[in-house]
Length: 559
Ligand code: AMP
Image (cartoon, rainbow, N blue to C red):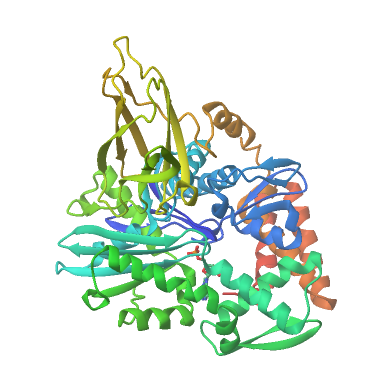
């Protein structure tokens, strides 16, 4: 069993080794694997660094950032077929499984997978589907900030600590307030936005530059230029200005420019912090520390606002890129009964309110539809089970369509539809009582997955079926088909991740260089390709090593 942080930008795999959570590196020596997939010209599937590099030279050959589309019916076209976000995520999960098996030298069958606390039911179901396709049984879907808190709680002393986890990743934003005391990690409240993250900051900066300089890159240069903007964004986290090519000239972008370009995004962080505190019934003064998670929480514009709002300097003692994966490894230890984590206890909450659609008679004879009736309120401790009674509206009513929603809006149109159950046979042989009454029970488990049970009071008949319609999730047949489609092909040394990554990286560099450097790279690359064709490991390693040494100097600036 392994712990996986399936991130928007990067994914990591971690396990407990000798009682300590550790992330595992791939063949490139990197423990952060880009969450990117691409199909190479010969039809083979690339995942991770090789895919990310290939996407820069061949933007239409694959996809990154698909986590943002999990739970939606969106599809992407590349490699001559259509792909769902679930299939793309499955490939990344498969890669994580492969990396773990490489280290552990035993087959890996199950995993703890982290998801943003703010992921709704469909996004969680989609993650479970992706795991199935990757051949992984999910022991637990763990909320990312809770994972971070576990990593923190694992290290913390026995004193009571009230903690805020501020998690700004590539595409999602979560704030969680929790208490750690003597090995007990208790989540008090979670709040967030599922479509706000570091990538939006990059996009906002790119848009600002285009507006300010009245210039846009050519279509085929767009991704490469965005990479440069991304680099500028990161550099501005540690220096006051950075340069970037615009319309053939190098221009300087200052940190103030960046702040101006992104004020709209930074303003959206504040209400979420306030809501999490309010739901936890705490004031900022009651917090002992604020823990930063997610690469985008490194931006000074974000940390300074956060310090202002909480009155505390953010704690960066745990690496924001790795803390979630470490927490997943600890949860994996908890699920497996590992003695190193025996004394740790975790409670979590549900991040959204769950309820059903009801109609209301506001004045006699005037029925209005579309109201949301909450059953489990947000930030209820999990697992939770709540029931409520509802009545039919019409005499002789024999059918009922029960629609389940998640969200905070008074009307269901403002909330997320989760699924529906059709009940029939409400009328019994005896003359029907009017109104007919049903009891609806919601049970929400530690994975954040909902089960609904409905009892028709008059007949005692129970409905406990899964939702007949759950948008965005796959049938067992569709999953089996996806598994078949992603069966690995026979692996030629050219397809080994290290070699693929080398070639994609070299192609990317080739496009950047000119003159002698380009010529030299071309020679080294040809030799490496020739060695690959021979399938003989010794020349492959030798020519590959030379290629790496040459490329290293050009990538030193990358962070
Ligand atoms: P995650 O999903 O946690 O891997 O977050 C990745 C996001 O963090 C991406 O949007 C990155 O651009 C962003 N990021 C990583 N490092 C930095 C940095 N030093 N400064 C600003 N943003 C960063």
